[in-house]
Image (tube, rainbow, N blue to C red; front, side, top):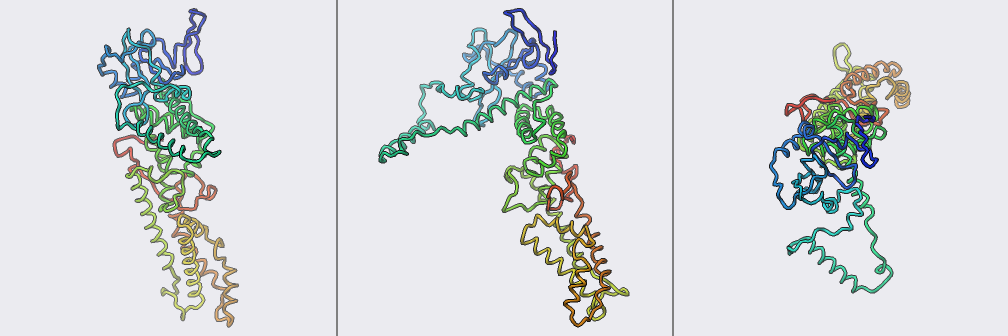
Length: 465
């Protein structure tokens, strides 16, 4: 008896000199056969107890009574198999699902036409050559007939046109569509394989080198796991996968926060959810030019309300701070300075206010999402903006009659900057796991995401990674 790196036991049999695998994906004592495609690597012999423990869907299916005398019954693929499931289309959802088949000793073999008809088999291009099952019933409203009529009309229209080179050229097959369908098929089959691996505490086969590929794989796996009620089983594995990307994970979230937000909810990932919310709320309102690949419509309406609430709160805080900065002045002897009482100081206050209003107007016209740059500039203080020496030079040039002693106003400008620096401190807090300047994030990232904001916590769930 030998064991490979995946924990699979291999029992060597002398029958015909062939080795028989006793382990994942086909256990010798497994009573459940799952047929995903004609490719043997997507055919499984699993234990009923494992499936019952990890999937409420399987638990319900095993409780159902099925008519094994039905003409649709099939023979067990192997001795000892008591349950058979085949991946097939059910209803009009467009997504294939496992369907339980009745077993009977005199039934037909596991049908391959399901794979041909649904396009489940990996070698789908070969399967597509087979015609669909024949039906003697004709439905006059059938889309197939409508399509046939449309083809005839198109042929007639073409026949009425004069012959030319473009008419004689054959139509090119939709190779891109076929490649896309084949890619989606492979992703789906791989997701089922990973789900079954997780059922047996085996590490899912998800990329650890490319986070974009890993995201695609995890999205498909989450959909499949949700279908069979097994999200709680896969969450620890997927959470661990993403956490291994470390800094690259947060860079990826910044590139497409809506997509990662949608992933974080079934994954119950507090860190990913918070990161995505901060990006969205800080950039809001994002219309009319939506800046990310994943569209606004994909975000759940209730989650979108959370984003809007955070953005509204941030806008109110920013408005209050803007008002405080613009109303700030300098007092002398307990009284607000006036033009008559302190000409130089009064001019400096007006200079600062004019500069601040000009900056506000600039960002309002250019891009509201870049407001963060202004507040971070104020947070730096000092000579990061309105350097005192240059302001004194400018005022001396303007004031030709030298009414003011401008060399002494540097201290007044410093007081105004220090107040602004303290005022914007709350706005400049960074809730992201990224350095905003290194990442080029121009909007504010001070949004606070609390435990009660997590959608899964409202239903008694537990906080995850």
